[in-house]
Length: 545
Image (cartoon, rainbow, N blue to C red; front, top):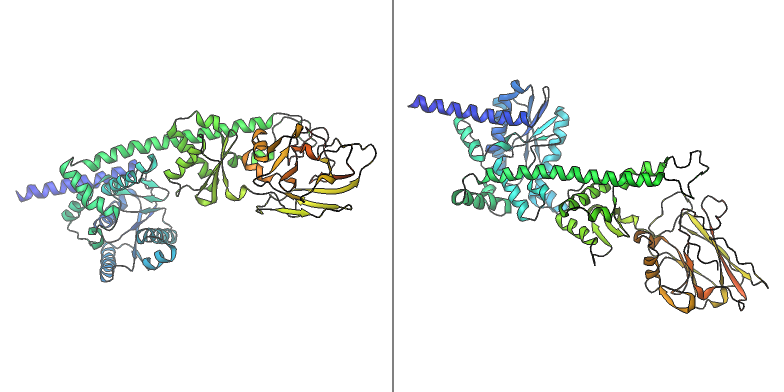
């Protein structure tokens, strides 16, 4: 009988080992010649991990190293764990690196939970140690139950498919060989091998939500609903992972197509780019700005294209746009995604603040993700080649006088204001970048600034129109409205630069003094005539002042 029991135990150990080995090979966790650094806390999971890696080293062709971090939290218990890991590695002849950290101090200094602070410090040291040992992989001991706990925790917190995918077996250089086995299987394997482990007393405490799931919820479910509950949770998790990968790829495809479409549109010759004297053939599409900003184009999408997608795919498109803008998306939650999606509906507002200093901005027929600073006003330094800076509420008040002749830098261009006497039959300029106004009608005070609440224009017939409404009707993209300078008399706008002037200030037979406003282009060249564009402000050319 004893021999039969021993034979069964041997078979169980071999089966357990082959299960882990097959999982590692199926997930392509290691290559021959790899150094593998195992994170060893002293608990059953990490002890099992170290034993298996050590036993498989020759078969896998890997070199095994160990790492332990003393968190400085549990006093004598933490010192016990450190000693235990040291003796185990000495017994197995595995090189060990031990580091000491004051996790609670770090958590307090950085406003983190103790759990999150420990995780950050642990992985930081693991990366450093792996680099020192030239290890291609870092092995951590998450198992099947950890994965099920994570899926449930993410589900309860309102996660999407990515969260329901659980813990990935391979993420970069991080590998998790034990994700195919349960905590029960791990403990049984260690007992059959005759190895002990250290128990972390904090794992029995239910101060953390994860511990409550581990110690109360999952055991109850296994006992009262289905003993294979964890296995079934992970089966669904695997489906979620596959769906997550699919939607990620589909979102990327949609953004790529959108980008290609915009690039093709940029290639089309127009009255503005056909035959430009830049050494390129017209319509060749050799637009360096488009080419250089391809990634930025991935952060903008037509709402028409966006709206035609199912809701779940919209969330992936938004997340991908954030990733393209920031290079990361870890802190983007479902709450952020839903807020951005709401922008595209009625009454959804015009912008949403996001992590990493980003903003989602709804424009006319567009949704874009931009850095907050990109919604900037247009005051610029002396270098016209620089990007416009966010100078906040720029406003330059101009003292009214008959000899006025001043030039003001606005963005990459400048505006010259010049008071001139009325001639008997003045020849009103037809240049789109030079406007004349009745200087005598200015009664509140002249200023160059950006739009404010309450600004308005006077239209033909004497009717008034709010500047906000004017910009909406002109379909000026929302993220550009704060970059368009206005010449104003109090809140009465004389000129929305590049668009139109107020009828109230037009030259009449009674005009005695003229205010000439002239835009000077950044290249110092002549101003375009008859509706030409400077590439700065869109000139409509309806009025000539």
